[in-house]
Image (cartoon, rainbow, N blue to C red; front, side, top):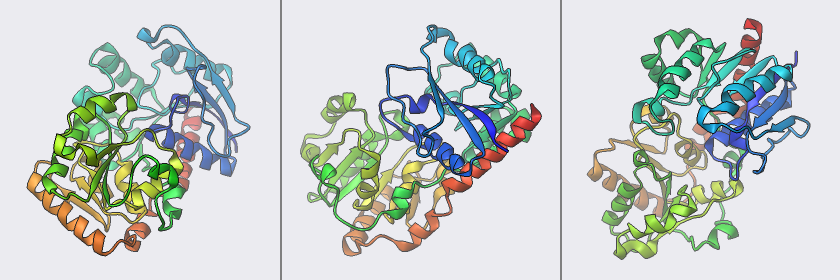
Length: 370
């Protein structure tokens, strides 16, 4: 049976694809392989590109600019109306937010509870604290991406527990297929040369960019660079100004990198540093292990579920422990540069095809409720 599914695809209607877009593209692309869904992708920015998922060339894309962002007009009214008008059997809202009005069965992916725990992404107020919880209760099903996120959701809204489905993300095929080799020329053209440590994250306080730079300075390894990936280019000058002068020439801020360059960048790193204080999932920790590179992670939130053979989980407050672990990882990697095969095998359990099949089953459940 083919299900008619509408998708909030704003994460694909953007200049650059990030983690949310990777999730939506992977799930829809792999579901499309099975032929169980007929998609309509909805976006709100006709002035920006739409990144169509692989295999979805025939799917309808509807990009419509609706005035009234202050009142979430597109999300709360235009999106559900378009899905109803297009005779969708299910509407999937993929990025934690969801309309209160649900004329057709609606599924929401709540990635984490960061907006409620830290105020990041969504400000406190009637929308976050009144509307969204009520909208969640009206949904036919809730998807989340880790057991930790499920526990956090139930902590805030216990009545959602029966309708929550935990479906972890997968590893991109490019990371699983990556073979040892030199850095791509496009990456070397940015001034990046081995050996280097790799930080993947943004500028929000929980990502701890400045803390990572201080950690790097404390290592006193003159021949090693720190590559910082994920900071918006508009913030590079401000962030670079905060880097201590004595290491500034060894700290490299990258622009946005193409998806095909990321596996090689990860695999050629001595180690990946991921000292975040909270994550709903943790793509960087998983992707590093998928290419066989050691990753140092905070032993918090969902990252505890991503501890594989080459991951080193550390107390985020234990700076001395991080420094010692970095020294060990650097020494080991310089002596044994080959990717760790046990780590690569372990990462294969996170399979986008399995994730896609689980999403399709949730759609069937939702459609049956309708």
